[in-house]
Length: 98
Image (tube, rainbow, N blue to C red; front, side, top):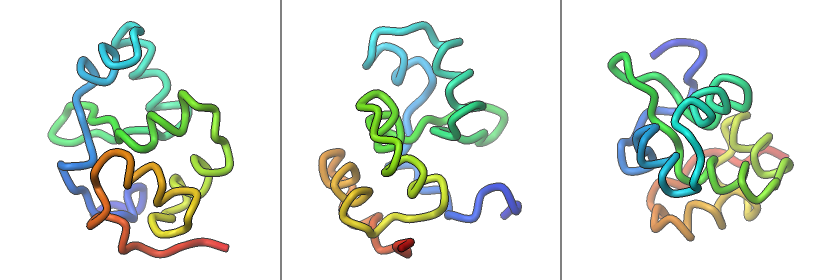
């Protein structure tokens, strides 16, 4: 595991660039740029994978939740709610910041 990805990868959390782009009605390149700039995804096997909860945080402009998510928080109420909405409650056993 690299220093850039402190949270273990769980494929249930992530979708492809194409799926993320289709879900919100933007071009794949737009989502790729968001992954780079806002850390809503990560490279896995040479391909971008987009976090469904992080994408929702970004689209809903919930900066506080996204900052917490990027910092490794998976358990605070602000972040956990996005995981619950995505049906990913078992993945929220991580640490809460703050």
